[in-house]
Image (cartoon, rainbow, N blue to C red):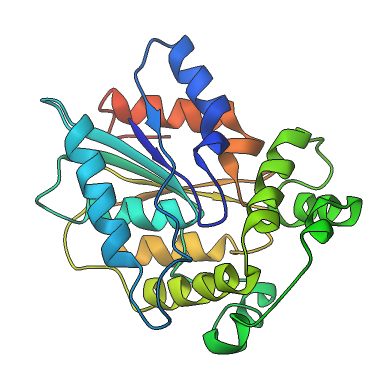
Length: 255
């Protein structure tokens, strides 16, 4: 199994899922994807990431292929790789994938009606802002289930990426550029057995996006996790691990 993280996240986001898979005796890897904020304005992002994921899949495919999971940006990359007939992807489990609609918070900030990439790139925020209690509260509210206590390590990891990136505007601008590339549409092709997973309390991408994804990919199944936010691998690692195991075992009927 190969697991992919979101644009503002790192491989550590999968650690609880990896622990459960290891307990079940299954081999899985999660890696840090290449940073995207070093690109020139206007330079496409997805070709670089697609090539990296393709190399990753081939390196871990063995003789049976891989089960490919991902969250947010990683979910979009997993879908794109699964649609590539030249890659040995046996099944895919994309969680909260982009490209099928967003909440207003995203639409008016880094989405269709947000400021242009050139303006976002000029944003400057002191690093101390991302290390304050207010930032922790906001990150918890946006990314995870609000009334469920989350490890401070998850939030700190997320915020440290912003605190250490200079200028921070380049990272935000890349988020807008990447959404536009995903919104341009997914490649044509047939999917292997695919389960589209979505958090019912995702504050960034609504569950209706998963239904639209199902319309785009009729062979896929959909599972909405009612009490889960934008990062199911953090809010519901047991459930996500179980779904990955079902796919790994080759079960086409994922109920």
